[in-house]
Image (cartoon, rainbow, N blue to C red):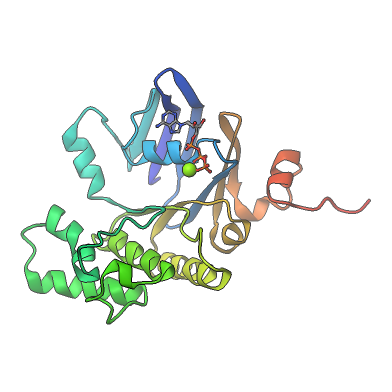
Length: 247
Ligand SMILES: Nc1ncnc2c1ncn2[C@@H]1O[C@H](COP(=O)(O)OP(=O)(O)OP(=O)(O)O)[C@@H](O)[C@H]1O
Ligand SMILES: [Mg+2]
């Protein structure tokens, strides 16, 4: 079963359509990377997929079930199934790392016993390599640690899919590659599905199984990352800085 299926989707704001007539699927157990120039509509599309932006037309299906953007119930059910790693990490500075990560449990599963909560929080902290940092406040962490903490929070409810907006942006190359490796490991060992927006070419090369390239209000390329190098599409080649072969 496809995780997400998008059918004849138009997304935009008011009477401005940003992306028109999109049809694609997000397969489970893979990392799909959404790429495109600045302003091509990556964030707009991501917001529509996670119920934050009502499409102008068309449908989004999750595991065969259509998201009803008019129904609080449908959207609440969706939020329990996804994790989101926001671009700025969006941790709450007044809460410790433990409390930040426990927050989704307290909101969505408030009858969880404290001992189970604690076990799960420490488990995800371990998964992202932050064991022992549970008492720290976000402002006491480095940028890379904050991203990993935000990833732990995104995963704490065992979501079906984790959405990441620019996961390694603003990090030094070593820390960025560490975070990419972490995504890869989580995908590999837990079979998780990730949808990541990024325009860092090195990062795409490290994490992408599939690529969705947005351009001119539509999808320019939708396929396996390994097929990018062999494509004859000039726009795609220039986007990925591929050198044309010498004659
Ligand atoms: N809240 C909004 N209201 C109106 N127009 C918007 C809004 N957010 C984005 N847009 C417009 O939608 C288009 C796509 O923007 P979007 O933020 O999706 O681009 P992006 O691909 O994520 O770019 P970037 O790489 O710079 O983040 C742009 O023309 C932008 O001006
Ligand atoms: Mg964006």
